[in-house]
Length: 422
Image 1 (tube, rainbow, N blue to C red):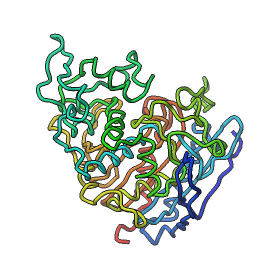
Image 2: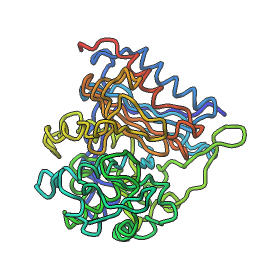
Image 3: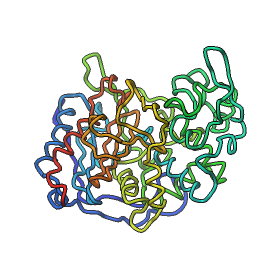
Image 4: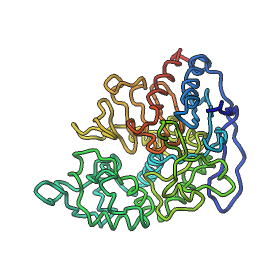
């Protein structure tokens, strides 16, 4: 691979909303990169972090990568390296637009909690109070279908323990072939895979939450997120599709050839028509965004629900979202095996015990990632936010062939944290 082009940006963070059909672009709000030492980082340590990611590009294992590191609200790294299209050798830039897949979920979780603060629902509500079709769903068991031991609750819906199966369990059901109402109607005809509250299964729970947002707000999910989240946070490049004028900034999806070097992948689903609004607005996985935009969202979380004068949630609500709600013995199990030291709150995973979790991230750090390899975490103990983006098919699966950039980034970011007193 030839030496890739590199782009750095000293001013970041913009305004507006992707996909708006009315209004203009709001004034740009620039934030300058701080000196690493001013917030306790080592310049050399952060350089080592960047170089480790660059090496994966140079070796042909990644097409390109963007990353941002911030502490106490001050960005100290904003880096783009490699290509957003490995075949055309189009340079990766810090404003490249990515498919963020399941990093959509925390955003929809925030939307849910806005409605919770408004009194539209309660954590202990049975889900069927808001989705009557789910009343008296049966549960599959070796002895056949049996009743729920107790009705699934909204708390369980937001923590992947409501009893729905993993996504693969619905492969033949065609949950996303229509719209959100069609998904609900299909699920209402199928048994649950587990008794509510007894097992963590990563499936359609946040797509269901997207439906709840629409029903309780009376507003389509895309419009709710645009007006209530993206506009206040000035996330101008985040939405369910990409405006035609911005398509040149969209990254391509990549995979691996027989020689295990990165190559272009064939897009499917929403990725095949990125400038078209999808009929199925997936709260679980169909947003596009940029590293800069997602940083604004993550920094709002670290700030306790507020950013630059725009308050989305109360600080106590953010604390509730990052508090473990799993019953004793129930463990997060994304790709297997189960993950010790990790809990789950309301649409976030949580580092409960860093030693057991074998991570340098601080206790109470909360995080998630996307199927194409994007990742982020918020560490309230050390006041750190990290956002990173790559774009590979099966990019988050530790056995999918993609380099494990998530644990690598955590190791190197905390190795660069030289002075926690600053």
